[in-house]
Length: 65
Image (tube, rainbow, N blue to C red; front, side):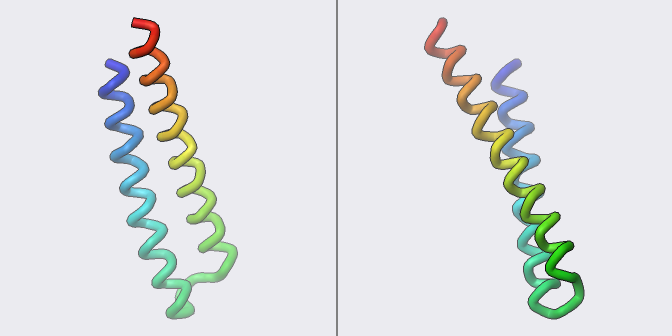
């Protein structure tokens, strides 16, 4: 079950990474503001942090077993 949760976090992180990539291109083209890009980047960091925490939890559970 924990492994499934970890996979979901990683998949969600990949989607957010793609969104940030698209937003970066839109920013370069002037289609979105710096503030909008910063929101996208903040979301990316939050998802990355969730992934890291899920990995730590998984590894700690493996160690306990």
